[in-house]
Amino acid sequence: MEKTFRSLSTHQEIDLLPYLQQKMEEPWDLYIGTDSQNIGNHTYYATVIVLHNSSKGGHILYCKEMEDRVLDTFTRLWKEVENSIEVAVYLRSQHFEKISSIDLDLNPDPKYQSNSLLRAALGYVEAMGFKARIKPYAAAASCCADYILH
Image 1 (spheres, rainbow, N blue to C red):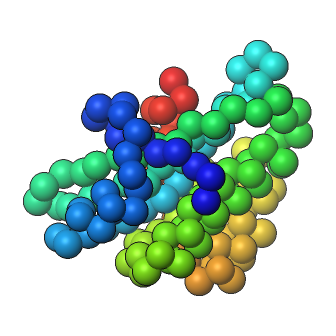
Image 2: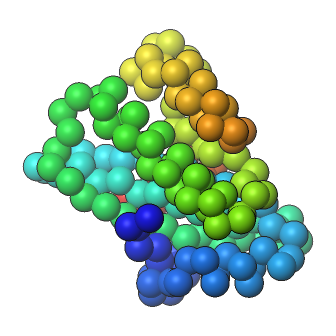
Image 3: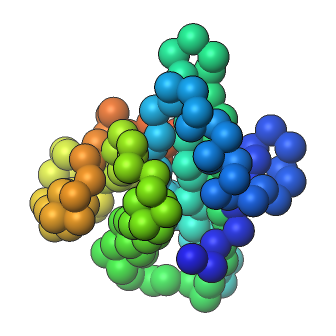
């Protein structure tokens, strides 16, 4: 995987696998999510790995990427799903089996554009063997990744 992750608390690059191996010695829930935003001529994607322990708080790791502006909303949102799945598949291939969920920044309300790919995205995530969460329960994508972009 060609993504570089940083710690939100220090903004320093981390060596992802050793960092997660150390953290996962304790009982953490692991969530993955991606959000995107068009700014000027570019589209920015923020993919996060959120480690949460109800008694110790959380750790947020993020990867921020930029590409030429994606004009089509469906394409931009689908790339969010793909980025999250890429990270989850990579972690699973490295024996991190305890991925709690992939959080999708998609809205179940049909009046929002993101609803148009909700069923396909849920099917894709579940077909890959992961649990999916959507708004309002998708905190990794809708809150943490969004925070990275603002």
